[in-house]
Length: 462
Image (cartoon, rainbow, N blue to C red):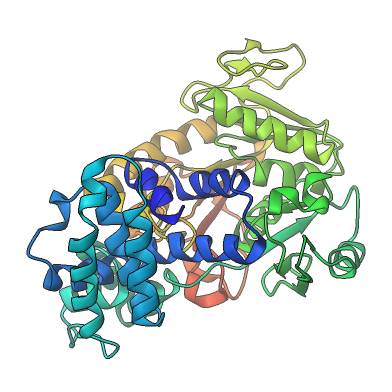
């Protein structure tokens, strides 16, 4: 199953969508589901290290191999790197590859994979990682492309390696209580009071409060979050503390009209609706109907009526409201919704390179291209221009990105100061956020959360 997931991800799938789908259809118990999860995410995070060892052990370049063979070699190398006994790592991986049904060439590659993984095993466990401060050596040791190492060193100097190391940590599972349906105390009692059991299992959920957002809950032992009653029944939402902090910084109040310009999958839009007591309006837009549908589903699960979902291009808001059961198109924008320039608060969680969430989206580091940073920064400037136009006089514009590059943070702030001189910076959150231009930056290594940049700009009242 892990090999199949890795093949699908390499073909363009997203691990956070591919893997849950496979697990839900698998019938595996919680221990095996946890093993598959570790194998997939661990292999994606440590792919750079695995490829380094495999290149030395194989006479065939990895790109020339069939995808299942390449995935199996990386998976086997990851197990060896992470301390699995060599005989178990090699035999289990080769056995899985030998059982792959199609194509037949994959089965014939099992002896080759066995030989390569045995040579990798002989090289460790004191693995021959390149030493020194050379960026190529750091790239191998931290399992990142060289250009990301260069970019983070440019922007953060000696702190870069801590940021790179944080990208290889397993992210905490964090829940946001829905204040309309529960309290943090009641949710904690619910989670810890009922063992998450299946035949032959006795796992109990462990809960601790968040360090960045006091109401957040870090949980262990929950298994499939979608099947957790508190989540399925709308008493909680899985959301990293950094995203919860951004939603809180928007400062939603009862009766206000708020626009979330790139809302999918809906975590911040629903958090703002909860913060205003579901009394007001949150217009949550997204360009694609399928993604907009995820926002609508999230609002329904939480019992929120104040969230109005739109299918809309952020460059040209508003366009269409998402109609009931709509997946490909939408209805006309209903009467009574705010027009341009009339929102109390506008949140732009802009498309970005995602360098702050590589621990959560490990495959992204291997898909990103250096040119993506400049391309996305140009898009961010366009969308921020549109966001400013949507805010009323005296309204607040909030720009955030889950990335760390200077081009998408400081440079955007500098550009905004010139493009919108009348907008004044509003106070940014304090430590562990650090001042970053007129905004604030949260490094993954500072708080054990996703990385995030936040900039709050106030339109003049007159």
